[in-house]
Amino acid sequence: MRKVSLFTFIFPALFFISQPVVAQSDRATYKDNSRTQYRDRVYHDNIKTVQLHQTGWKFSPPIIKLHSGQHLELEFDDLDADYKSYYYTFIHCDADWQPSDINNFDYLKGFEQDFVTDYSTSFNTSQAYTHYHISIPNKNIQLLISGNYLLKVYLNNNPDSVVLTRRFMVYEDKLRINARERPGVGSDLFTKQEVVFSINTVQYPILDPFHALQVYILQNSRWDNAITNVQPQFITDTALQYYSDFGNEFDGGNQFRNIDLTSVKFISEHMAKLVPNLDYPEVDLKHDKLRTKDQFSTIPDIDGQYLIQTKDADSSTINSEYVAVHFHLDMDTAFTTGNVYIFGQISDWQCKRELQMRFVDSLKEYVADVYLKQGYYDYQYAFLPDHSKVADCTVIEGSHSETENTYTIYAYYRPVGIYYDMLIGVTTFHAPSN
View 1: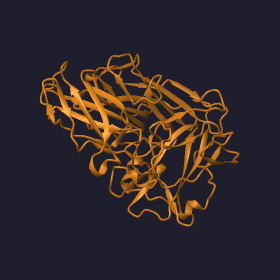
View 2: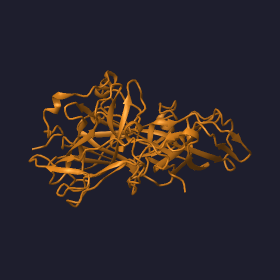
View 3: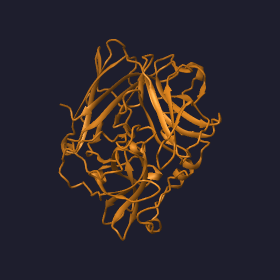
View 4: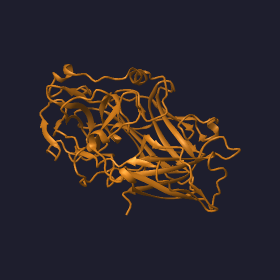
């Protein structure tokens, strides 16, 4: 019999002690499956472990070079464990992730949509599931221009029955971007990281860089705190220089915490215990603490990402178990001006309803119960203030300028006569710089 993701908790009474408060607007959009959202989103609770990455590089950002032969792979599991008729299509977007004002035949060659034919069923797992896979571009659909794209998966050839959406980028290598990180200045010296860079325009001159060029800076694939509207401080015949002492700063944050779920037969470092359960593996994690007053210490991490893997069977794709994981964050009192979330690639870098923690006053802790496929996970705890869209990890994790982070700079260009935002330059680098 198929196992569902609503599992029995170690402390059943916690259900009734303190339920999470979900903003009405978030609850409405989550349940509105007819509305396409132009961000990474899962629209049905039976869909789990959605990943989009370059072929052969699990930790890559979802980006490929135009006409390069590179491919992206979309993978996801359906816990209903049956076969469904899933279709997919692509929507070209501008730099701000709104639909471009162009026709689909301007950016697609081949079919406008296609159906998913590559699937496999789980084997010898407590939780049955069907694993689906798409490679893009492919023989049926090719991408003609650079820019931002939304990959949309839906049911039964009905575009209004949205299952999931995922952002990805296609770039042209027209600009060279030289970038590095340095500590913040003044009072931010020990907590901030500033991104400074220049854009070489020798091979591809930029006309009207203040209006036609849009530059975005991302930290660890986060779009919520991306720095936008970046303007050059100096313009020469060969380069645009972005060397401001203020404005391009991020909180350094802290090294990510991690969980090793690659085996459910043996206890790993962060596990408190494996909980006996006849229906599915269950793990109780050790209690996490606030780190705001801790001195910086180097903890190896993978910059907030996760890797699906099992050491208990042959195939990580179809033999990995789903595990009920219980998180604990010790806290004397609850926040009254916002909520706490488990955050990272595990949450698509968003504060998601299903990863919101609840405070248990009698235990003086925030708790959450999450259903995860076996693997190695980085995560942090994020605080989302009321009425804000930007997560703040420093409230719980602290912030240090020495923290390792991955930064990506995207340069979008729309010259006169072009009706979409081309992505003409990308660079990724790791902080702290050597």
